[in-house]
Image: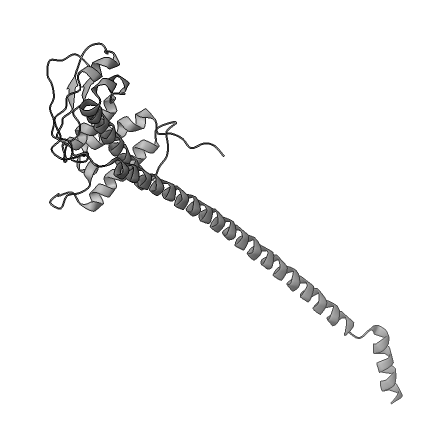
Amino acid sequence: MAPPKKIVKRQQEIMIDFLEQNIEMAKGIPVSSPVTHEAMKEKWIKLTRKLNAVDGGDKKAVQGWKRYWFTWRHRCSKKAENVHKIKTMSPGDLHRFLPLDELEVRVLQLHQKQKGSIPKVEYIKQDSESDIEHEQDEETHFPVKVQIKEIKTMRPTTDFNSKINSIEPSTPPPPQWALDLEDRRIAAEERMADALETIANTMRTQEERRSMLDERIADALTAIAGTLQEINSSSQHRNSMNHMPTQSDQENAMKDVIFL
């Protein structure tokens, strides 16, 4: 059995581009939103087709891509939360921090437009004098921001760590056991979805085989009925031939008539 395909970077880029143009898809439909559930469903179907069309990438159903999006968002928020923890609790360990990449920063920026706060992390892309400040993402419960600076050449990873800014949290962060529990729950849902998909494929295959078997049985019964009809016709013909009077029988009958 071939190993499952992985989600490639091109699929992540397509997802982010599409969600940035359809922000309401990132958090669902608010009560006051003019977007209907049917319109939202059509948008997810359109996005799914684009993602599944990428060569070498993973193939998922609509619900599978939805789960991946929320899982990805959660992981980016958790990674940004770790930046805040390292900055406030262990500043000397910042050199061990792996900074957010461009796509992860865009994920956080996308959700700042919807709710809450995310840890304030600086991503260095290209040279520019302007800093872009955004709203906060409530998922990690930290009143911090994402900043983007642009330069013409990429700087070393140490530049990320030296420019991490943070603000004292207004609310305590969620406990680690709660985050781990959420990760396990999402993983269990993904495994359950894969199992259900496998069961559905197996049932579909069995149904196709049963239909083929029914067709073969019907053809065999038709052939048997035709053979029996031929045998019956042949038997009737033989019986009719046996009951016909022979020439000698006719002559004896004529002699009996003359004798009388």
